[in-house]
Amino acid sequence: MKQKAKCIIVSRTKREFKTDDLGRPCNVALFNINDAHKTTEAPMKILQFKSIEKVVVKGLRVDFFLAGNDLIINKLKDLDISLEGPKEENLVITGKQE
Image 1 (cartoon, rainbow, N blue to C red):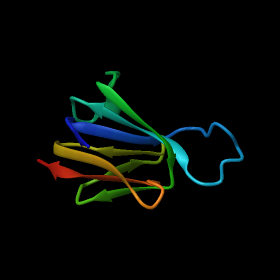
Image 2 (cartoon, helix red, strand yellow; image 1 turned 180 degrees about the horizontal axis):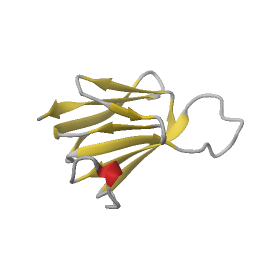
Image 3 (cartoon, rainbow, N blue to C red; image 1 turned 90 degrees about the vertical axis):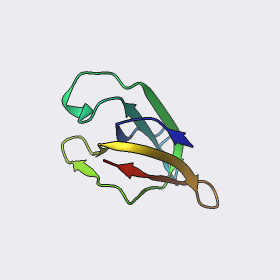
Image 4 (cartoon, rainbow, N blue to C red; image 1 turned 60 degrees about the horizontal axis):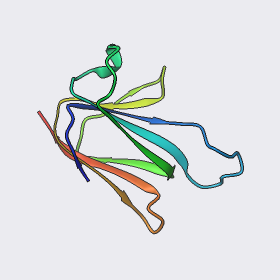
């Protein structure tokens, strides 16, 4: 699915049940500004995914901040987020950057 954003932050969230073996919930927050993690601005949209095994980022520069365990992708011109795999367990992020 095509999305409009200048910056995204990918973060994992807590599982509903500890017995869930596969996958983990995660959020992708979309922002109109770069370096959104340095501001208090709220995201314009949050995409929620219930059971993701891994996040695959193709062809984009990614920053990983150890303090928050988040992936941050800035300077986006185009963004596409999709689910792949037999059970749609892989979150795939592609796009173009400035």
